[in-house]
Length: 253
Image 1 (spheres, rainbow, N blue to C red):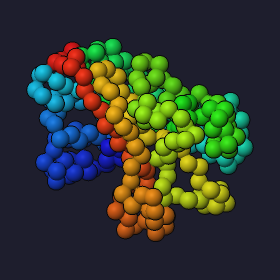
Image 2 (tube, rainbow, N blue to C red; image 1 turned 90 degrees about the vertical axis):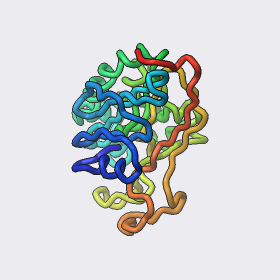
Image 3 (cartoon, rainbow, N blue to C red; image 1 turned 135 degrees about the vertical axis):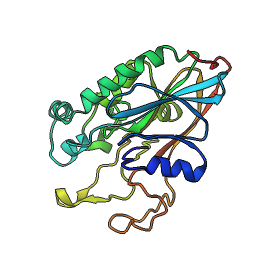
Image 4 (tube, helix red, strand yellow; image 1 turned 120 degrees about the vertical axis):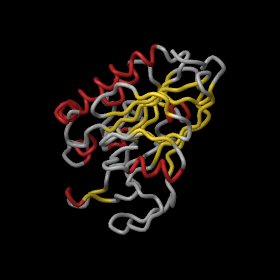
C-alpha cells in the first residue's frame, strides 16, 4: 500500500484479520504472518512473510517514489525531448530513489533462489519496457525512453511480472494511471496521459501465472470530479499478479 498516512494499513489489516507493517507512506498487509521487518529506504517498507513457517517464506518490499515533475507530462504537455525529460526525472528525486531502493534490495535478490522476493509499488514513472519505437504513438511521440525507475530494478535482477505475462506493450498496455482522470485542468484540459506506473517485480523460484491491471467498476469508473461514490477508492488501477511457487523456494536465506 502507498500513501498510508495515519493507521490506514493497520485499520485494513484489522478488518481483514491480517498482519500489517505500517510506515508513514508505504505499508504492507498480509494474510500470512509477518515474521520480520527488514531494513529499507525512506521510500519503502520491507518484511519477511512466512507462507508455511520456516519452510516457505517470501521477502516483500513496497515502495512509493516521488510524484513531482511527472515524466509523461514533459512529452505530452510540454513537447520536451527525452533528454530533457530524463533530466527532470533526476531533479524529481525518482532516479536517486530508484537507485537507492535497488541497491537495498540487491542482497535479497541475490538470495532469491531460496527465498523469493517481491517489489511492489507506485513508482510515479512509466517503464522502459513500455516506451519503445512501436508504442511511440501511444506516448505522444516519445519513442524509446530508459526510465530510471524501471531500469534500476531490472538491473539488479528483478523482473516485471505484468510484462512477463503480457510481453507486447501495444496489445496490452496495462495502464494503471489513471482510470478516473480524463483530462488535466492544469494543462488546459488536455487529455491525461495513460501509463503503467504501478508494478509488481519479482525474483526467485516463482512463475507468473497471470497479471492484470484491476479496478472495481472497470471499465466504466466515474471520472473525476464524480468519483466520490466509486467502489474503488484509488485513482490508480491495482496490479494483481498470480504467482506459482516452485519447490526450491524453501526455507530462509
